[in-house]
Image 1 (tube, one colour):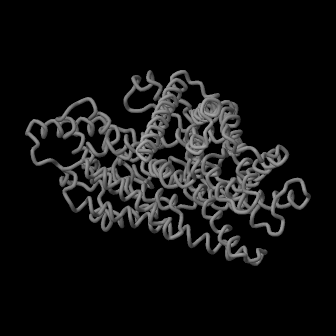
Image 2 (cartoon, one colour):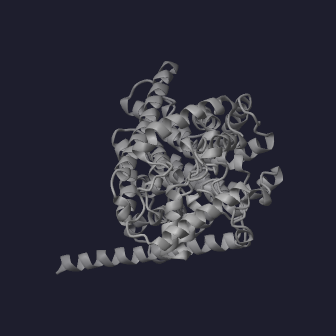
Image 3 (cartoon, one colour):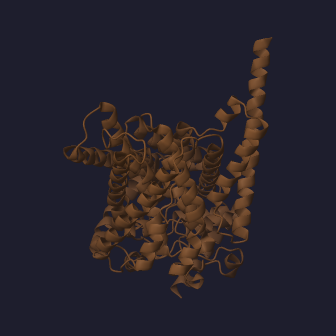
Length: 593
């Protein structure tokens, strides 16, 4: 009888807390809507979620301060890494505007890899120096503990960054957003790999010296390259499977396969002690570039919306738990002086990261990164949930100090620095002119607050060529152009009905129809128009990569190959056929004019 009562009590406890999470997540979504509707960017969505979490934590501590409730509201790093983080990273890769990302890939890699390494060692050795002076009680027998903290606090969180600069209503400068977004995603993977590398040396008890640094860098390089290879191979395998089957007849299976392969790439990399974030991100890019063309029109729209919704809920969930963790006792070992010093160290390391590396990048670019843009990038180095989650894995007796300090840094940068991001962008002139980025839809999008261009567009907008570096179609210069734009076409299926779904699917499967005459010049021009790194040698390399992809890759893994009708439904009517041809001809003639 008592066992039954205990089971009923546990069931009721779980049900009530689940209801609580549903309600507060709903409040976060409603708050985000009101923030966007009223363009109130002094309080970012992530900061709003933290504040809601603080309020919930205060109420829980005042009304029902039981140990079970406090445990339920505590931040669990394993839940974060295996449940909440994967949807965010995969959605970032799957909806990535590949043309802009890869056009600036070498500059982004410079910030994300070398910049993170610079930041890690600067913060790590400064914290170690603080410990040697006795200003903070940390392990001074070896710099490894301080370097682990430097690695975790160097993670520029894409959750925090994208929730602020990713709002289309802010109309962020395209180049600025591309650089900050690319750095934030790759930087997290680099920070995690560095943290794990230092942790392995710490656990082994091996003495750390300058002679150990090359071994650390070698291990970092192997882990990074291995993670990318695994993500690419798993993405190609999923694309091959969907390309050479008729799974497009069953949209629910298509979307399910995307979920499974995405989580498979992440978990497989983690099981091999590699970087799941890096693997998942590049897996998402490959699936978007190749497999997106193998999906039915229904699955294209459904997958994009589901991934985006899961990413948004995961973001809110993470920041809610950060806010609740702040209230329920994570700050008991807080040392104000150490926190202030760490904030200064973060800003100083960011200076030595952004400005020198921007100078080097400008030597290889056709268009330099202006000083104003560099200043915004320096200020936009927000810390978030990844830093806080890694702090939970800090070893030694000083773990609570590192957790509390990281928590304060995350909250301060998200609320204070995040709230000032929009004014800083205005001050530095980093908001692009709205008229320059109007979508093809016209004034209706302007009225609904969607006038700005979108760098993270729907993966259905498959107008890019070789991973976004160019385009097979004449529409390569913009993912929002009408010709061959599966993203815009797919969005129309939500309101037009079955006949238009068939039309859209055919246009998204065959976006190259009628546009082959100007494909090379348009694709190369579009790649250069996004101010790519000068060192890419776009014209020569693009021609070779496009030939290689059209000859070997797309026949195996999918893509907008001309004349491909393999995804058409068998039961289409003749009326649907005529509608598809008419729409395609109208779009082509409009583009030619």
